[in-house]
View 1 (spheres, rainbow, N blue to C red):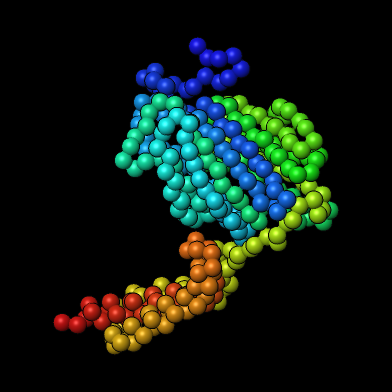
View 2: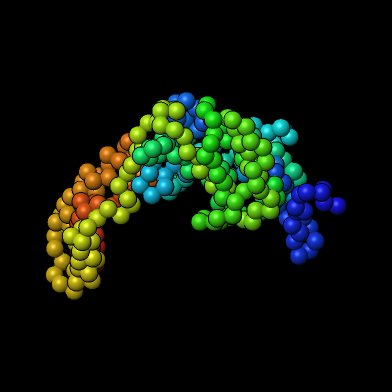
Amino acid sequence: PAVSGTVPPPETAAGDIAESIATYDVVLAIGTDGVLRVRETITYDFGESGRHGIVRPVPFRRGDRLYEVRGVRAGSSTGAPSRVRTTKLLNDVQISVGGRRHEVRGRQAYVLEYDVARVFTPRAGHDELVWDAIGTSWTVPIRNAAVRVEAPVPLRHATCRAGASGATTRCLRDRDGPYAVDFIQRGLAPGEGMKIRVKLPKRAIAVPPPRHLPPRWAGDWPGTALLAMSLGMVPVLRRRPAPRRRVGAVLAAAGVLLVVADAGGEIAAYGLWAFSLGDRCLAGLALVVVGAGAVCAHRLRTP
């Protein structure tokens, strides 16, 4: 029988208990240095499916905004394998917790800790934190979720909204204190989260300036037009006399250099997934396409 006040776990068509997160408890501790210190306690019910562990995506980029996710560590109070591996993929740091050679079943508890820097946004009269405490990438239901926000100054403006992206459902405020506030939510469906918004007075904490990157697509019409023209030239190269192979190789090499010059600095500083496609990068890709097309056309016509 279900415990009073909780949501019973879902069942499959065959009557078996499906995977779910029984409890998801988060502590967001705001430091005087402006760093958000996160502690997540996740009680995951694997049922009988057998998994290697859990994967928690944490955003390091949202639009042109860049965060610093660091100090990732994990453990398990139920003895489940808790080795941590992190991989940057597109906009998220994929935090994998578990063991590649071991599968776990039943209910397991994981404790995940990490820090997020440059997460506050300076506003005209306050500094603001907007953070989805549990994310919206979970593919299983979350039966009971709780988020505690702690700050070094009194929390007078802290709100929570539950649901999918853009949701306006207010979370239930469980306990309030001068320096902490608790939010709870029951019965979250897959893809639903808890977005926390905190406003602190100016100079209450140190707020490093936000770090921004150009958008993924930063090209204007000249670069886009060059790339489109290069793609249109590929079939033409097959019908006309093929240029020398060396010409194609030189064009391709010049294109690679342009791409590296445009995106190399961002990638070297912030990683592969910090790239953006500007006009120089698009022009470089155009040269690579034409050069590669010339080389292929020469090979096809060479007996």
